[in-house]
Length: 265
Image (tube, rainbow, N blue to C red; front, side, top):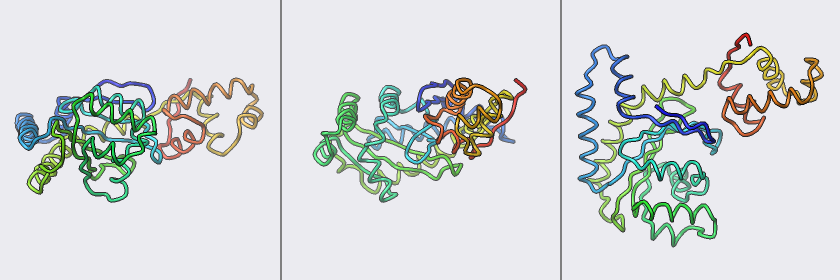
């Protein structure tokens, strides 16, 4: 597993990571069977006409993604990195339809370009990135998340120029393969998300965070703990980085939702 500490944080993991963890917690581990299931899923999706399959478990505040647990295999690392780091998801018209209907969304680049607000720079960037990576059509869907604060997003793409070929048979293949892959990845993703919540704070950081959660301003915190405003502000900035959020409102929300642990700094 590798972690990009930017915002949002990309946590890349391999199928081997997930299967190794599954073998450790499974009372009757059968790595060969799991690998065979994944291979069969990949082969069925390729035979159906898809060239890439992207699995992402997203932790977010509202529509702002904080951390994305992303499987390396079967997808496009290059496109996924651009998509998340450039926050193309914030204006992705495909996701707007998915959020509205909750049902799988089929798309092709030509329709996307014709029906989208291409004056929006990130929409243009999305369309350009799709074309550059040979992603001319595809399907986006969600799966039930293992935790209430995670969303599982799956994206499949094809070099085909339209979506006429995505019929009921193909959709059935996608759903069956997606459920299998999701089932095998879920325990590892849950463990990664749990581990990410363990934030060890020094005593002074804990004191600042406790008062921030009570709604105190930096000035009020500095006065209450007899510290300088500059020192308190630096602590808040450090805490934002530790929790991988952009501002103190997000910090307060996430810290309250996650809880936090003290360390004797």
